[in-house]
Length: 164
Image (tube, rainbow, N blue to C red; front, side, top):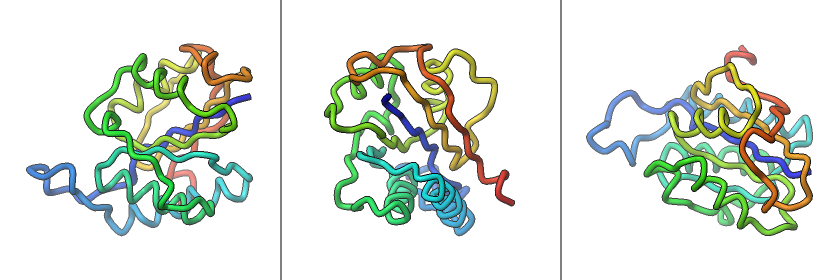
């Protein structure tokens, strides 16, 4: 089984859109990231690989998860396309090129892209991807090259409001 954990960045400051790339997380966003990463740790959902958008708010969210889950922040891979916008097919190309020893990959990025990707990877997704929303998708395959659209099973979805 291969698992993709897709995480939308945590709540960012509501200003600075003229420099969107460098928007920082709000205090609430940092707290939400900590809460959700602790929930994953408790459930023993640990990344073998972490990939993040280079945007400050996404990378900081990834760093908070990494620290909680004892994944070295220095090993977070940055994928520019996660900020610039990526199609599901482009996303699958990234996934299909992952090392086979990776069983669980965490991907940090932005909406609406992540919503569309989750929606396209599972058979049915009738939810939302609010800030810091974390969706785990399982694929009953042995190789990343076998991952395809509509074949994933939504294993879990965590949202900050579920912990308040």
